[in-house]
Amino acid sequence: MVKIKPFAGIRPPKELAAEVSSRPYDVLNSQEAKAEATERSLLHIIKPEIDFDPIADEHDEKVYKKAVENFKKWRDNKWLVQDGEEHYYIYAQTMNGRTQYGLAMCCYYEDYWSGKIKKHELTRIEKEEDRMKHVELQQANLEPVFFAYPDNDEINKIVADYVKNNKADYDFTAAPEGFGHHFWVIRDKKINDRITEIFAGIPALYVADGHHRTAAAARVGKKRQESNPNHTGNEEYCYFLAVTFPASQLRIIDYNRVVKDLNGMTTEQFLKALEKNFTVEPKGKEIYHPSKLHNFSLYLDGQWYSLTAKPGTYDDNDPIGVLDVTVLSNLVLDQLLDIKDLRTSKRIDFVGGIRGLEELKKRVDSGEMKAAFALYPVSMQQLIDIADTGNIMPPKTTWVEPKLRSGVLIHTLEAKSCPVRARKGEGD
Image 1: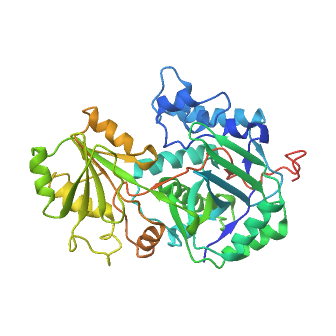
Image 2: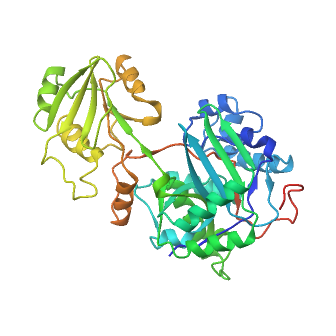
Image 3: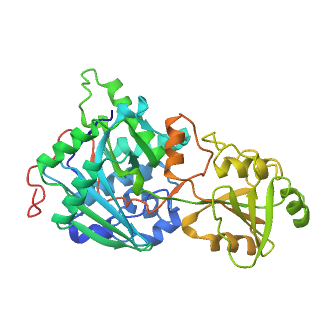
């Protein structure tokens, strides 16, 4: 069963929430971040290379130092203020008219090492170490990880009742995506205590987004444990920031592929080769979306095609074999295009479904890419099945949207550093 706790969050005043909060560090490149960052944006802290002219290398020591300076400046200027007491927080997001309700909490680092926090992707050591360095220097989890948990009726009722009976502390629409972000501080201690009790009976949490941040946070906890001879397991560094959502409320969107060439084949030869394992149907110039599992869209030479994998070419009883990324990788990318390693090949790129299939068409029509493949989205149940069986998804399988805003809430590793009444007039 998992271990969680409330915490004294560091967050912006209500009137600054929309400006201080930002998109996550890994959604924007440095140039995009520099263009998007306003004076108080958290991007100056999570992507501090943008404060240099020209933009500095993000791994330069002066960049890490700048991040620490900026975090201190934001707190000194009261653009970020710590709550006076420990709470859980409700963080809801609205996209395309649908709202999902998560609980912001601190999760326990040992649950990651014991497998109670379940992952479905491999991580890269260099990215883990970069995130570790930020956490260690800042003494804080500046950006939350995105978890799912098995649905619990009592938690759903607690959240629904609190939202119904209390005014949101934040309620804003974020640019440029236009998604709604809504936030409540749970100020009732009895409710906070009950949430802790309920989660003590929940068997596992699932990483939906933020594998590197999760791994880095767990490694920081372990490193601190090893260097503290008086370690008890209750120190603040044993916990890290997450927003957890009921699995049924989450939607995973497609993660698509574009390739630079057809491995020496002509268009006609490639389409003919596809017929061995797929039913190939021309769809004309109008964008075609995959209609179900094992159905793909292909865009090639200004035309859209439906590709339906033939029975026997996939294994629906295998949690990895059933995935369309596996089907496409095995039957097309590997067998026909000789793209063996998706992590290292320079002949393939990946496009998140949030950009739409228009982006696939654009990249092919520009001549940058030769062909594009759109996939039917992975379901949350598929993700859970893979995590529960200890399997790992192929690279670039899931795209979770909307993303959590960074800077809405921060967790400090400093021990019990919440000054009473730190937020005057906000009800703590």
